[in-house]
Amino acid sequence: MTTAYDLIVVGGGAAGLYLAISMQKFGFRVLLIEREASRIGGDCLNTGCVPSKSLLHIAHAVHAAKTASQFGLHVNGTLDYQKVAAYLDRTRHTIRQHENVDWLRAQGIAVVLGEASFVSRNAMEVNGTAYSAKRFVLATGSRAKPLQVPGIEHVKVYTNETLFSLQELPQRLLVVGGGAVAVEMSQAFRRLGATVTVVNQGKRLLEKDPPETAEVMQQRLEAEGIRCCHQSQVVAFPDPHTAVVKGPTGETEAISCEAVLVAIGRELNLEPLQLARGGIATEHGKIRLNAYLQTTNPRVFVSGDAAGQLQFTHAAELHGKLLLNNFFSPLKKKISYDNFSWVTYTDPQVATFGLPEAELQKRGVAYEKLVYDFAEFDRAVIEDYPWGKLVLFTSKSRYLFDNTTLLGGSIVAPVAGEMIQELITAKEAGLGTNTLFNKVYPYPSHSNATQQALTQRFLKGITPLIQKVMKGLY
Ligand SMILES: Cc1cc2nc3c(=O)[nH]c(=O)nc-3n(C[C@H](O)[C@H](O)[C@H](O)COP(=O)(O)OP(=O)(O)OC[C@H]3O[C@@H](n4cnc5c(N)ncnc54)[C@H](O)[C@@H]3O)c2cc1C
Ligand SMILES: NC(=O)c1ccc[n+]([C@@H]2O[C@H](COP(=O)([O-])OP(=O)(O)OC[C@H]3O[C@@H](n4cnc5c(N)ncnc54)[C@H](O)[C@@H]3O)[C@@H](O)[C@H]2O)c1
Image: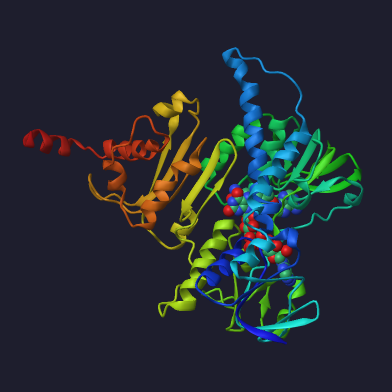
């Protein structure tokens, strides 16, 4: 057995890198074990956030060029998909300059390449060598859930692992799923010129987001020519270019497709870890965790997608921050997603923060729901997004100037992901709605929509009695 480390981190994705780099900076001996050198950066860098957002960036540029004809600028020509693919490689390559094995070793982190598995409660093995440590963090991530449908073996099937190495645009793409991957990639490929059909088992798109904002997103996708079939499933591929889809009432339809993108959620990368040998219990296909992201072996913790909770790069950061706090502070923190947020980077973006309405109801929180449509919001008129919407949950307003608490909400707008930032900060800092209501926004900022929503509520609260009192004061 090799010398003991302070910490062994398994997995070199967002979750593993965050902890390995932080602990090394604090002066600890860290060993990072990653399956393959080319996987450093994990899904986010290689097969997730970075290539998908790069693709969306190109798709939005192409769309802007095509729609400029309404202002008299007629753009024509054909897309060179190899240039698109080269751009996806370029952005990843640039980020890899500071996310690679040599760079990590230069920082002082020991890196071993190979698949890690437990040999005992305090040691793991890679390629026949055992390594022990005081603590372990499992950050082994997840992979796309496979679609099991008869005939699929004859079809061109892509997941996020293969989609971003395409060298040619598929002309007719069937997207299976209705979550963030399906929605983002449907729009990207539609804008690049493919015919896109979405087949989703769920009742609607983006089920983590409130129905009000997700519905606007669906309308925008449909306006671009994307067909969405909900409560539907692919039941067979009778030939490589046909999917038989069963709809909500049991009827079937043959949909022509050249390629299929499977985006139906994730499976956890746990099998090779030999968890039982490490004294780590599992339940329902996940690692059994307490509120501190600690396994049944107290020296082993889990971070990122592998925890089987919310699966985002910034969830990995949340987990990493919690683990670092708990490694050092006597005041241990429990995992909570009450202040969590996410953004679907389509055009428009859908950005959601805080507690969802169902959770507010479950917890018996007395809340108020503000829904603000952007039809008369100046910036939305200027930039042509009158269909934009803001949903805000606050504590109940008891009187006109009540400083209500921000509980959660969602925005659908072209830059919703930026507009939501001040709401996230305000909620985290415990600032009430009065801070946003009283703030003076530079005109005409997109973020001012929040103040417009609060103003609408304020104006509704001016009763005849209040008017009478004000007249007296005046
Ligand atoms: C298409 C797509 C787009 C996305 N876009 C966004 C986005 O815009 N924003 C966002 O926040 N999130 C996004 N996500 C989610 C995000 O990519 C993940 O939540 C994040 O990458 C998870 O990081 P992780 O470190 O937990 O796991 P991973 O990135 O999966 O890393 C795990 C690593 O562990 C290694 N490994 C596994 N098992 C072993 C083993 N036994 N031994 C050694 N090494 C092992 C793997 O090789 C891998 O490199 C997206 C996901 C997809 C699929
Ligand atoms: N912008 C972002 O932050 C971003 C972008 C992409 C992915 N992600 C994250 O990556 C993870 C994976 O995303 P995802 O979209 O694959 O999963 P998801 O869990 O978000 O959505 C899965 C979708 O597939 C549908 N589905 C499940 N089984 C099906 C079947 N057999 N046939 C048809 N539809 C089926 C579900 O109804 C659901 O709509 C998520 O946690 C997501 O949050 C984040």
